[in-house]
Length: 375
Ligand code: IPM
Ligand code: MG
Image 1 (tube, protein in one colour):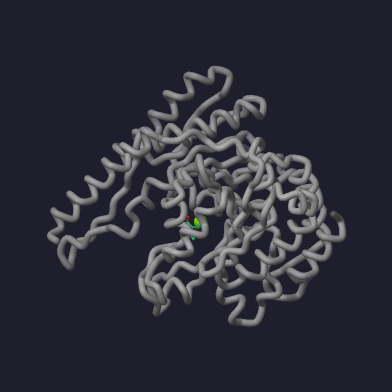
Image 2 (tube, rainbow, N blue to C red):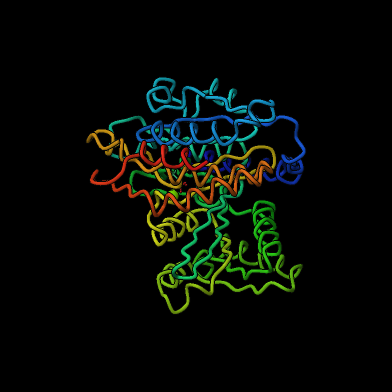
């Protein structure tokens, strides 16, 4: 295919995608569902260690719901780097089919091959799942009570730089072009979720993060759509920041406690949420929810840290992040009391259990024992 034909193909697919977005099904109301199937995906590297720790905790916390059949925790096999490389698929077909039988997913980090890994260049499983299950909102809370920081990030999760991340085109051996896609429908559904959250939580202020001075078309559209929607929420204070100064503001103690809710396109959201998580104590402490209308997936914000396992430090992987994600999952499922119970214990665990990556502190197992003991 010539690069012009490749480009045409991409445009055609995006037009079809927008058509689908405009005919979307409404969101599932989990609180009124008789049975919720939670698929558990271990992932790679430290994934199995932290995910199994969290599963043990959930089995205890949800013993009643599991016994009554309201909740099923179902192990999903095969989303490993070995199997994905063997099948040469980011998410092998049979694994995707098993995933689609579930409602919610608790997912450990999966490895994404990059340059220098000596692995075929298959796409990130996360990105593929987010796209396949149409998980359009990546919701990431960061809370630092000592600094009075209470942030909630709404990162667009299927568009922007990620929509065609592995579909860039080599025009000639000397010119490479990647794409960024922003749509009205894709931005509106994210912005709606963020504004509704801000409203429900006492009209918190909302900050829109872009680089619309440079990415004029895509970020320009994103910014405009968010501001248009803001008119429907007159009690919410809305402003915007360019992503560069936003990253500086987050570590500026003079202003960072003024922020509440953020709305960001995909890549800026990726970067800014790692920065924010670091302020809370590291990416190992933050949970992440990927929300769509039909499915939702909850995961640790961090990667699979293969190196920790290779160097024999796997036992010191911190399950806190995936457990925080599980709290978000329980809230999404409408199981509010258990979500609160787990969150309270996790807050205590943060002080009581000190897991450090160099292996000098507590282990994942100590963490699990502590949490289970307090439930
Ligand atoms: C995240 C991760 C992913 C992303 C990677 C693993 C593809 O960094 O969830 O933030 O870039 O979105
Ligand atoms: Mg990231």
